[in-house]
Image (cartoon, rainbow, N blue to C red; front, side, top):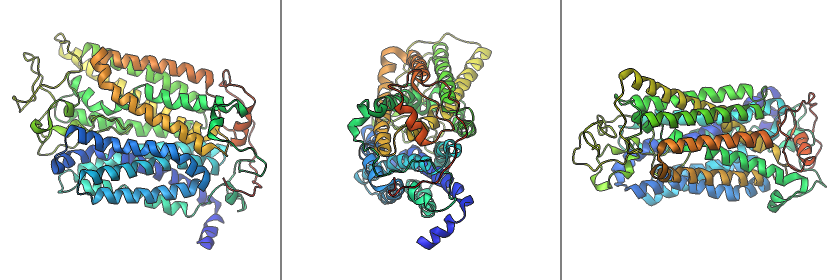
Length: 551
């Protein structure tokens, strides 16, 4: 193996594509695992007779595994190395996929999802750190952002595969099993790459590596408690990291994306599968915006993309709230509407978790039309009935409404304007997240911490990301019941404005700087206030690393 790898390393022009493949395939695996349950939930409900609480358990088990990985993964990444952590996570993912594919009970399904969640969370952290350390400043932004692009492609791929296997007997088994394919391909790419910056430096002209970035004898060691101390401005770095991950969730992006199909249906996209197609269109927009971010992140800079993205998110999510004032949402998560015993077989067509988050409650996502759910909309448009019973099932219990106010009759042009305004706002929101918070948060997190504690610090911030994701997702229905959907989205808009102020005041520009320079920059500041103004860096010379220990 060593000679084979040395042969590959003698050709440095192949290494950037290999790093790109590791980042892309890691993101693809992550996105696929997040979204695949949206198509598997309906056949699983039919095969196992899952109740609402059991569906929520199955969905949330992935989140639980991810949270566990974020708590212990940092130690594994720092102790065993980034490359070994990714390879180990792929082995764990294979075990989880095997458990899911062969599952004969809910317990095995939950175990498989728990294991898969642990694997993709550990891999996501290790991938971003590994790639950011292995390449130079000019390639770091693009290659780390490629992970986010892989997530969006994985989500769309899961939709396509779910649709193709929807009618096949036991089709949910290969749905889960295919997640192992990109993980295996990623492992093959890793075998051709060095374990870290020190091994890379041993190969002449390998890559423009970060000057002085590898762990050297005599460099300071850090504990997890140092993240909250003034030493080397670790407290300021933690403020930046936690602020980014928390604000990206508190802006409501899990719910806006997860409830896309329901929101479109509620504001008027009722004909056939128009709401589903609108949601799939959002996925395509997300891919395009992420690719745009990849081209701009090393030109415009991290800070500029975060500011522009957060500002557009504030405007667009507020726009959705205003549209819902004029066209109240009148459908809710269908799983919560009826007891499992009385729910029609096709009810779950809009009742599964979203791709960009892992809510604890069952939430709607685009699903293929099958013989069971065809012609069964979430709610009827009857003007005379306040309960709005399900079309095709007049005896069913009424669905909960997002808004109890009855909208005034509107002309066809007014309704069309509201429909298209909602569509534009939703796509603007998705685009803004995908070129701002989506890729840039993880890029900044992989840059701002010293190499000695980078894995643990990244994992610490990631645990707050998963926890705030869960909080926002679980609070959505309660917020709707308390203040209504319109005010809920306006609250998200206000949070985005606060996030904009946070980014302006605290988040620095790291474009074009080596990891060592970013570290020195943070050490000179007590906090990052007024540190975010654009910094002009001279071209960074790339130097080989002389060190005796790998990171």
